[in-house]
Amino acid sequence: MKKYLIVVAGGKGLRMGGELPKQFQNIGGRPILMVTLERLHAIDSSMQLVLVLPADQFDLWKDLCRQYEFAVPLLLTQGGATRFHSVQNGLAQVDDLDEALVGVHDGVRPFVSQKVVDDCFREAWIHGAAIPMIDVQDSLRHIVGGNGVTEVVPRDRYRLVQTPQVFKLSVLRRAYEQRFIESFTDDASVVEASGMDVVAVEGNRENIKLTTPFDLMVASTLMECWIPQQEI
Image 1 (cartoon, rainbow, N blue to C red):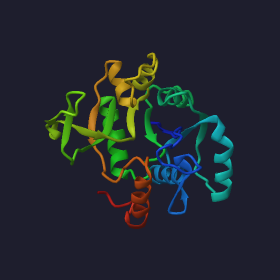
Image 2 (image 1 turned 60 degrees about the vertical axis):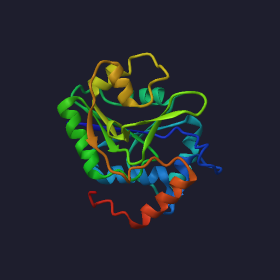
Image 3 (image 1 turned 135 degrees about the horizontal axis):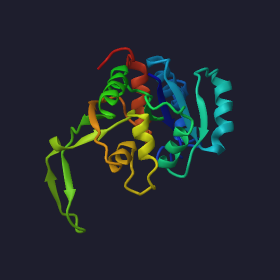
Image 4 (image 1 turned 90 degrees about the horizontal axis):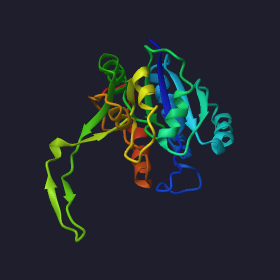
């Protein structure tokens, strides 16, 4: 069974700050995106990695690959106007194999565990679609009016969604034939809109999406103390 993993890294990183897009900022002395790709390759070197970047970042990426002697094999393709369109472009690089599995992962999530990746691919093979989620630890409130009034909601009914989100190729292709709408916030929402149920897999809490300077500080600490082989 062929496995693909589309890694989307099209963000400008405005909340991260700095001169470089967030995926090219360093943790542990290497760009975040390289750490993510090296992690995924170490988890399963048989997966075909497809990297989706904005076209105007190709030269920067190639320069960084030379500078850091980056050697993970992958297919590079151009991103689109939205994440939806970037995933469409990544899918176009996938061979026409109905029995293949395709995952989609955020390029700025370098701390996914091997167990999560393995579980997502296994459950997607069984059910057609699987995504990692973790419990909400903080209290949640719902805004009910424009004057600041809120109401408590039961947090045990909600989950935080991570990546990789994994699907049978036929399922994902059919889903991405739909026209884009604003409510498509991730691949699971696209697949559900096509009529397919998505099953949950337990994620790992370290698998954070690096978006802000605070996230970068957390990531730097994780780089020093987190053992990738250890399944949490």
